[in-house]
Length: 236
Image (cartoon, rainbow, N blue to C red):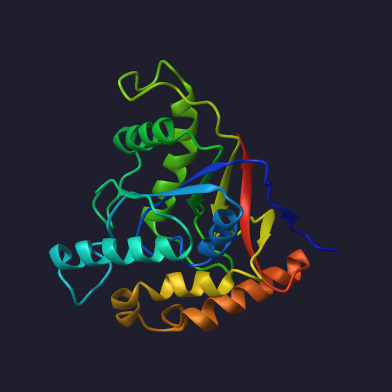
């Protein structure tokens, strides 16, 4: 019996909020490709430009390069709006400034679904998560409520209370999934657009095809499809 439920499909607009370029490409972008194919609108919002993510390249060089790679990666899965908040990569702080920025974006884009990165201490398999992911994920959850409260951030646009769910990608507590049997190849291609970043990595995460396909197969076994992408779905 599958232990992951199907993600809801009765929505039209999604806002994906993550910390860095490449965060969405490690699994979620294959699901996003299916959503945009179905006519849904997905927008990306990144807290940073990932400028501290390449050890061999100084931030002033890597930031613009990684932002360009992210825009190209998004286009492959049907996303043509990619925004950057320019919080400092590696030391993104949870707090009111980040919540304000995220709430402002939620009010402006008016999503029904918000997708974010794993906010838990670990990833599936027990691998330690990093502070930027945790801080952005937790701030996203709070910003959804902030965006709905007309007395919070009163100078940041009209309140938006239409977010119905937050979907957490890469969560060790996954509850739902999307069949990506037809879209995994585009998800892999979107990750490959981060070519300079991947060239500086070592280990399995530097190999998009093998890394993403293995995870999709394992998730598919839990969902009852050949390939799938998982999310922790939090009703709001």
